[in-house]
Length: 458
Image: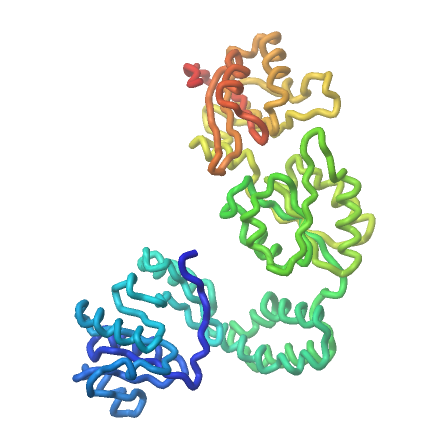
């Protein structure tokens, strides 16, 4: 980041705006939402600013402007509309040691004005470091639709009751209380106009210590998606932000972990092929142990927890321990890989049967059983298929099926290092060698209903 976002305390402080026209009026409208004293430096005021001065909302100074005019300020806006005059006033303000924003001159700005979503006391500021203000406004528009208009009122109720909660509840219970308030029936009730009822619900929860099932731990098996952090689901992000401990896999992008709470414990339980530092039994045991301690646990898996992720073993362990769990599905790697090559998993007239398979087998000496499913109209998505490529080629060649099969290769789908290639069965091994593809990769083997053989691209 070139700039650091921070909210300034404004109560009882002073803001100076140099300029008396429309630009100055725009900044004045913004700052009037705070509790500062506003001083306008200008020889003349436009009608809007003149009215604010007449009603005592702003102070107007008409005299000579010197560095002293900008002394003891929280912030200075220079907004005369004249670039040369703005530059001169900027120098005077800096001589006084002020923090300055010069309208439309980012190179002269110590502070940049963000786009603001105002649900006071909930305030969201969106900045692009001055590079794309239109984008910031677009993001603001989307956030305006996500946050209900009265959300700030609910936050204010919570603020007034924080001391009451602190007297009656411990730190863990307080965290669970506010999670329940802002993520459940209280917020829904308030959004529908039931402000008084929502307040009573919070007070009752504080006094009784009862606010949903928060006393026992829980586990969420969350799909991290195929790699890119913007392909995790909103529900997955929400569970990450609620989690107290996260157990994550080897292939999970570190940027996805940045979506979690800063104070959440992160435990790497990665398993590399042939080097299982964390055997599955150990993973199951630590998840169960953390949940028994009353913690909210996320088991973060790459891809989809329901596809070749050994989620069944973890769920069986949780069930045996009588611990509640939730499966949060997401974008499976096959979908991401297919999209990466501009295709679809099924296509009318070409492929009406889809098979998910794994290239890893418990018996390395046997050919994969799924090879028998290949027939016209079938596409097989082979997860971690690079290691089984030689067996696939041998089987399809011996069976006479090789000439009917189109092969697409996608490695590291939806990541910057993504590699894609298209070839025939006959050239599969050579293509893997030439492209340097290794797992994680998916091989798509397609036997079209109406074959149109394509020349290999690699």
